[in-house]
Image 1 (cartoon, rainbow, N blue to C red):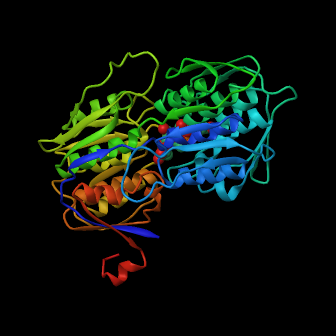
Image 2: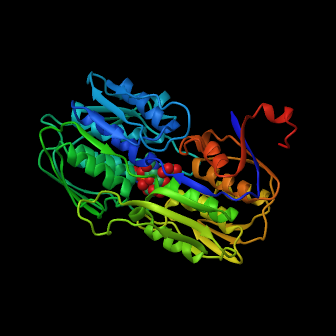
Image 3: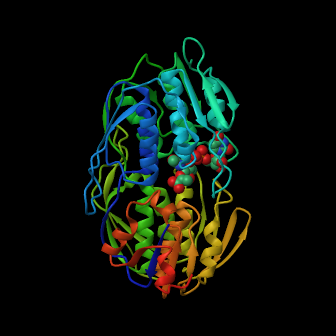
Length: 454
Ligand code: EPU
């Protein structure tokens, strides 16, 4: 296992280009199962979760043309081509799905196109229970029979295929992002009209919807809580550039703000980050956007620009609640909480999507942060300085929060188990080094030899 050894206190400054979005790419790759035609997706990030999805698709009979992206750091340009060559397999096995919860994305497409899908039931994960009841409820509404056998969910379409229906996807914590992806994808090939009520409005769902439309699907209402899908007999091939990763963009912006750096961030997803950065402005983060298309441009493609990010004064405390889009994303909560440990006063952070998602709190406290957690709320009393310490990464975004804290802290921080981080951030250590940070990737076994405190 790898660890990062970070010498903190150096500003993160320079120019960074945001990669394609992991969470848009995963369901878009799964959409390959909906057609015999070729799909060509560009800006596919090279991440562990994506590689696992490609492995899963290959097992399900998808031929994948994946160029070698060669040495050096390049953001754009990785184009992946897929085409189904064998549709006989419909079982997504446990040993792949357990490595990546997003394996559940193949459920809807496989059921719609192959009439049956068997997928190992995803378990919980470090951020709390991760049920898929809403996915299953939606597929059942489209006529599928759903059963559980030996830890696998087995969904079967009725004779004559799935049929359109009204599906309500609201759950105790709002809609479901991947559930919406699954039902919308399945409905493209169902007979008749499907109305998804309480659909997720996340930009990644809009991006997926636009890919499906270019494959021939009939979808309206993307980006709103009511998505209407009129089923078609078949879908064809398509080409699409994946939207920029709003979470990666936000994480690097906060790295600059926490370390007192100045960062120019290219491929910044303007419309996907408007709300969250309005909130972070209140904390003292300055974001200047470059020229970009007006927000009401028809067509719905992501609006990209270059953002210039910095902070000129000490960070100010804020109240922040995670919410479904366009609210503050849960996937930026750990990073924002890490940042607010250095604010001048008390911040209140409430997690409304995954109420247990606070594994970073105890680790940040080892670095001198002052945090009190009550259920889904954390009260963060800002301190003037964090101090380096050995800490343990526990999930993807918590790891990012710890890396940010390490960059800003005085002294050395060792973040163990960065495989969590590698699931969602492409070569973060190398990019940060290029931006002035002192951060080294080492094997955990080497830490003792290096006499690093653990
Ligand atoms: N939920 C249910 N029942 C369901 C599905 C979800 O109760 O059937 C609950 C969940 O337990 C949670 C809430 O609804 O409390 C929202 O979960 P959602 O289904 O929207 O999450 P997801 O689709 O599994 C995606 C992202 C997550 C991100 C969430 C919320 C991908 C691959 N994953 O997960 O990203 O946190 O939406 O925005 O798109 C990450 O990238 O670090 C990550 C965890």
